[in-house]
Image (cartoon, rainbow, N blue to C red):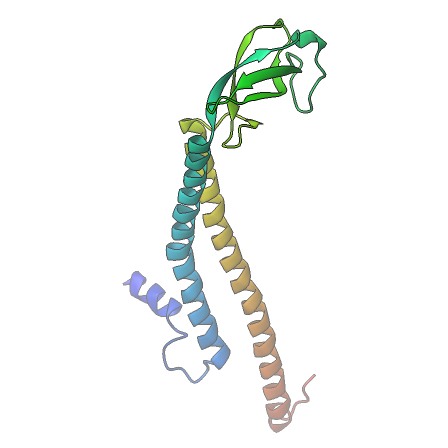
Length: 193
């Protein structure tokens, strides 16, 4: 019995009621749309974003391939590259691409390596040194994070939009109430104010 009263309370804006205003009906429809966006669009955006993130990571995995490069100088003599840890340093390396062309570059390698050491590196389609592709676990974590963030963004945007519209509607309701009070107040023998 209590549940029927709660349902009626939430649906009062759609029922015929002499006290119901246009703003009440508009707010009810907006609330319904926001609820649908949170329930339907939020998860859909999350799934689509996660799929796009996973696809991008798989594309990176397909475009990058491992190579074996040779250090041309001791690693301790190389310049420190930005963003490396203290165990690593930038050192000159050379490698031969799959088409037979020779390349040289600077790679972040362990400081203990000597000239002539073989290191495993990654290159892109243009045979430029690049970071290794993400692992399967990293792809899953990143896809999950991107999907969750997208779903939450839809929820936050929808909720913020609803409360913004509700504030405008409340101002309109108060202005209408005040103007009606100014009309009815003198009829009741009181001054509005």
